Length: 157
Image 1 (cartoon, rainbow, N blue to C red):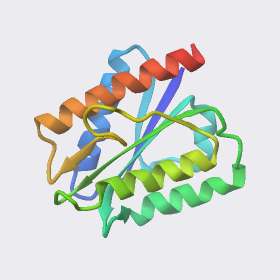
Image 2: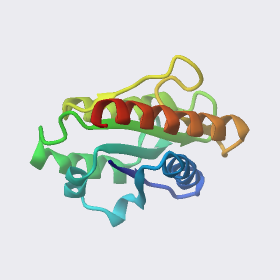
Image 3: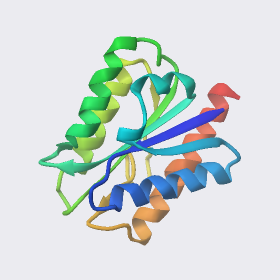
């Protein structure tokens, strides 16, 4: 099984979250690649069983770099069907749009036919950081990674 974590980050918070999630997935003995969005091709997604995308929140939306990346996946629409997906985000404030950012990424994944898992505890749609990665955020990133791997192994194992 292989997982790719794609992120865009200007200030470093989203990058830090990607690293925490990636480290926890690696701890679960799953081949994991953490990569900056501009250093990966959308077509590379076809090679992975699990895809996680992280973006900072700008005006309640994903970064334009992530949107451009997702828009480019239309050329292989349907070929991500059955892969496991997830998302995470960071913003400067509580109510800064983290949930809308995550949901917009998850919507694209759902249109591709990907499998998404919510979380009844903690950050429901995916991990969020408020201004910085604190203990709460780190724990939610680690919990997200463990649940992601568990689902991936149940479906693909």
